Structure formats: structure tokens, C-alpha cells
Image (cartoon, rainbow, N blue to C red; front, side, top):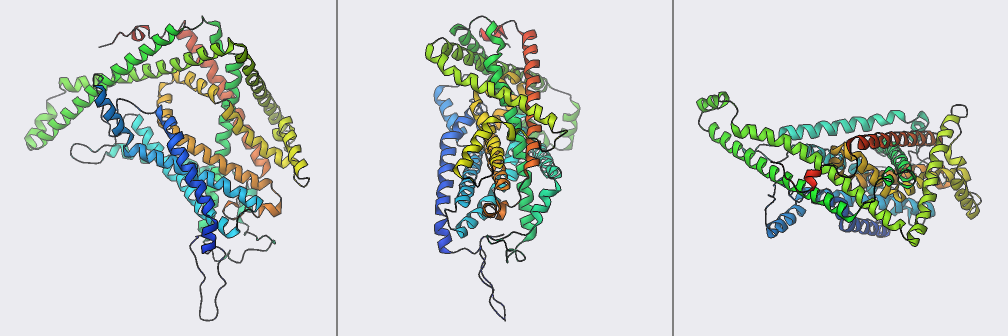
Length: 564
């Protein structure tokens, strides 16, 4: 299991060197994979992470929960922003995101190198036995821990030490409870893996000639079983996530292409967008002012409480019976106002995004080139509708024919499978059709990203907390989904390969998922995501129609009128 092992000798004879021992040649051959990790990490941290985390950054807050007043000068705002960008929280999130993306890219390169046998096997084994445990640690432990912390912070709890220097026990306790719930749910996912996968995982690994590896008995069997159990659960989670997101995107793309309800409204003008932006700016300014006032009052009361604690028992008793002061009542009022302003800010922000997207789409559709460029989106949306209908029919057919699957009947999958078989007649066309079907789920998600974002903002209009939590964890969630997609695709790829190629993708990825399980599991979650998205769009449209006659919600705030 461990890469840094060496041959051992006893009194009688020397044991042959372990095939997993580290040598200079293996280290040198593994340098290309290290280069892949460094390059992917740099691109993720320097280019992708700033764009993903930009929406989650609050100009009024830094990384230490310090609130900047709305009337602060520009120089102070610049220093405040620089301090926030250098906080350990954002640096830690950037490091975790870059490491996860880099490890996922390295694992993908390793799988392809194993299939084509482009690198020395010893170097591949060394890189795999470093990459896979590190990626598992990021996906199962570190990223969920950071996401739980972000959820607790966005809910209003602070992780800063108190005035007396004590740790925030409530916030840490909530984070620990959320993390424990994640571990319980993650490990419970193993109950859905059929027994065939468990038997496949329990078989000892074989060499390229089919013989059992001589180092099997000397390895840490418990550690390998734990690694493969985690891999199988990540594979199940990855398939579920990709199916849900694909179903979400497959409904969002046709709805925004064919059935947008906002086309019946009056055309949007630049004045409408500017008025919405003015309302959002005014709301954000009020929110920053009230947050700053709340922080000032909380600090003042905390200092007074610490002074009363030094006066002895009599002072503590008198302080407990004096009742609530005006400042404490103001704190309660400010908290309620902040909750309302946060909901208003999220609603206005979502409306502004939808308005800008609609105005941009209208501008594109008014030109000849724009109408030509809309043709691929119509074709793609039609395919999404076909995929939903075909998957529904396949699910109904599976009741009478368990072997039925959408991947075997989809014309695009079959066509690409025929191309793969034409490239190599020995390839299994149906097996590669399943792999292509799973790959197309990622293509659907990427191709309909804009529509999916607009649908998400529609949901955020009547669930403002969803937008705030999603923005806080966007970068980490993207890295987590990308890594689980790579692991799931690797496990699925190995299960579809012939035996001679399957042994090359063996080792730490030996726990494969059978095609029948993958087909049924993916299609079920895909339909669930489609149904939930369709119901959400319908309900969101009804709520929007009842709550607003046009784009002008919160009219007084958009005109710049501030509430006290």
C-alpha cells in the first residue's frame, strides 16, 4: 500500500524487492505527472478560483469578520479588500481547490497513461499510490470540513475568538455536527453498492499474466480495503451528482430556449437595468451600515460584560437582574433587519442577473449573426428533451427487461461507439456507448451552464439563503464535483475494458462498478433531477407571477430610498 517500502531480509534468505519500492528511475519517470499536477494547480488557483470566488466575496467584510462602514473612503476600501484577499480562509480555500483540481487532472493523466502503456509501470504505481490517497483525503475530509465551516459562517456564527480569548464552542460544535453527518451519509452510500461489486473488490489483484500478485499477503489489506471502499462510495456519489446536475441542466436549457415566460413581458431597457442596479447598491449600502452598527454594539456589550466580571459576584448578580438594556434591544432589531435586507439583496441580485441575461439574449436575437448562432442552442435543447423522454421510457421498460438502458439506445452514443469500434474492431461497442453516455452528461452540464445559472437564480428569488450558501461554497463545490467525476469515470472506464486492459487500470482503482448498476443508478438520479427542476421552475414561475407584475420588485429601494 505504501509507496516508500523496501526489500527485507531474514536469517535464511532475502525477499525479492517489492514492485512498489521507490527507485530513482521510478521517481524520474513520475516527473511528468508531477508537472501535470503543478500546471493544473497553477491554472486553478490563478485563473479559475478568482472567478468562482468573486461572487462569494463581500466588499464590506474581510477574512476576520471585520465590517467596513458604507461611508469608508476609497483608500480604506482598497486596503480592506487586499487584507481580505490575503486572509487565511480564502488562501486555504484556494489551496484546497487548486490541490483537488491538480490531483484530479493527475489521476486522469495516470489512467490514460495506463491504458496506452506510455509510462513505466513502476512510475505509474508510485504516482497512483500517492495521488489516490491524497485525493481521497481532499474529497472525504478536508473539503467537506471547509464547506461545513463556510455553511456555519454564512448562517451567522463567527469562528473568531471571544473577548476573553476563548474558542467559539457553538460554531465549532455545529461544524463538527455537520461534518459527522456528512461522514455518516457518505459511508451509508456503500449500502447501495451491489454484492457483485463487493466480491469484485475482495478478489486478490492479478498481474498482467493473470497470476495473483505475490505481494498481496504482505500488503496492508485493511488499508487497501478502506481505500477501495472510499473509492466505490465516491464513485456512487459522483454518478449521483453528475446525474442530478445533468437532469437540472437538461431541463434548464430547453426552458430558457423554448419556454421563457419573460418574453411576454415588455422589452427591457437600459433604464430598467440601471434602476435595478441602483436598488441593489442601496440595499447593499444599508446592509453594510447595519452590520457595522451591530458589530459595534456587540463589541461594546462584550467589553462591558468583561468589566462587570472583574467586579466580583455582586456585580455579576446585579448585571443579571437589571434586564435588557436599550442597546441589547437594538441588537435584536438590527438582527431582524439584517435578515430581511439579506433576503432583499439576494432577490435583487437574482433579478438583476436575469434581466442582464434577457437583455443580452434579446440583443443577440436582433441580429442576423445572433439568430444563426442560436441554431446550435435549439438543437442542443431538442436533444435534452429527447434525452429526458428516452430515459423515462427506458426506466419504464426496465421493469420488464432489466438489461434495458438509455446508453444502448441513444443514437449519439451508438454512433460514437461505432466510431470507436471502427478505430479498433476488438472494442466492445455497447461498453463504449455507456462510457460515452456518462461523458455526455458532463458535456450537457458544461454546454448548458448559462441556462443552469439562470435557473438557479430563479430558485434563489424565493429561497435567498440558497444563493448565499452556494456562493460561499462555489469554488470548493466545483473542485469536488470535478474530482468525483474523474474518479467515477475512471471506475466506469475500468469496468468496461477487456481483461488485459482492465489489469492495467487495476491497483488502487480495482474496485469497479458493474454496467447494470451504473445504468440504473444514473438514470434514476437523472430523472429525479429533471422532475425536481421542472417542479421548481413551475412553482418559481407561479410565485413570481403572484408576487410581481413586472420587473419592478422593491420599487422604493430601487429608487434609492433607504429604510431607517
